Image (cartoon, rainbow, N blue to C red):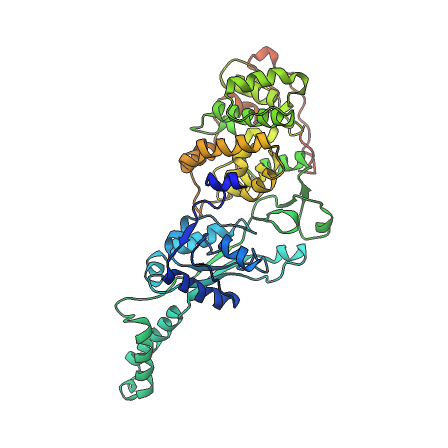
Amino acid sequence: MKRLISAGLMFGNLVPVDSPALVDRYNRALKQLTGRTTALPDFHIDLSGFSPEVGDELDDPAYLNHDGANRQFILLTTAQKSAPLLNARFSTSRPILRRWIELNEPALFALTARDAVAGELVGSVYDISAPARLFDMHKVTVEADTTGRHVANARELAARIETFRTRPDAWWDDVLIAEMVALAKETGDVTKTPVDLKPLTVDKGNFWTSHFGGVYLFRDVPHPATIVCTSRALFLGLPTPHLFDLKDRGQIAKFLELNGLVEPIVKARNTDAAAILRQKIDFILVDAAAAQGIAPEGITRADLRRIAQGLGDRLPPEVEALAALVRWVEGGGPWPRITSDHPAYFYTLRAGPHADRDLVNMLLSELTPLDFRQMFIIHKELFYARYRDWPEPKRAFAANFLAAEYAVDKAGARTALFGPEPGMDDPAPEPHAAPARSRDIVDMVGPWGAVTRAASDRPARTPDRKPTPNPWEKRR
């Protein structure tokens, strides 16, 4: 982990808290939220104000998120909106908090100039001791104020000013006038400089949580389902139409297709599919080489080809399938048949352009564990957990690659791999909506039809069959 930290790949882009004034503001907010304070003279904080150094000092890495349901936060500066969210328990937490900061950025800029803002992502569930509680989560509301209650006081002052203006006898109400003067000393002139924070309530929708070993809950799609990363036993009998685990590859593939959540990389617009697939092959070869005790640090693609030749029949099947797909993309080979049973299948997909793009790519990173780059970009907690168990040569290669190829242009890399960043309000796929058809071969045969480039190589057409009553029948 020290290698990742030194390369800026872990605890990177945190906001420094390095002055007595900022530390004092942080402690006032921390005392208000948790009843504790820090004695550290300086430290770093993430988007929510969580500090790994303070967590070590308090021996409590969840000091702002004890229940794991309603995350608390401390804002010292609006610059925190660009920081990562560490130890995230829900995939929705970061986009909701960042959206709220952007919604209230002018007011937060003024408020944090003299005080810390403390708040909480409040949901309808306060205890997640059982999986059934996940299905009760529907909305999240952001509640916040400064430690000096500037927002609450400003609202009270605004209400008293309105009373003063509208009540005929308010000029003679000495108590009302005294209250207005006292509040104005705290807030300033709210008639000229309003101090308020716009509320934000967001539907929970589809989300991932780290609770119970990892759960993907898709309910705002035409065909809802729950996908668990461990045993399904805890979720049996719960209110979900369909329940899968990561071994149910055929059912997950059908689920993603029916809901229009993914697209083949070779079909994605404005994407260098061959380059992306080649890099995925490299990552798979690095893993295979490291498992054989071959140190891949600093090697070139030519070296990886020689490693592939040396592996012989030990060459991972993912490499052969992806290499065949690269040949097809470049016009030098037949269309490969890659079914959902094949280990390479999910490596050929990415999330489509919709509001749940990152969530679907998180799920794909679970199903493509050898693509460490996608895992690092989309699902850092999973990357760090897997990294600890990798052979040293693979850890060195991954850290060097990410520092040299990804960290130098994070936004560009994300766009190249996953497409333009979706907005929070982008519409979800419409039920059974089919994309506009073009005449390329991918559209003609579906993502993975058994079709080659020559018409004579196509299999004879079989009679149409009646649709199966079970939409989750394993894909063939």
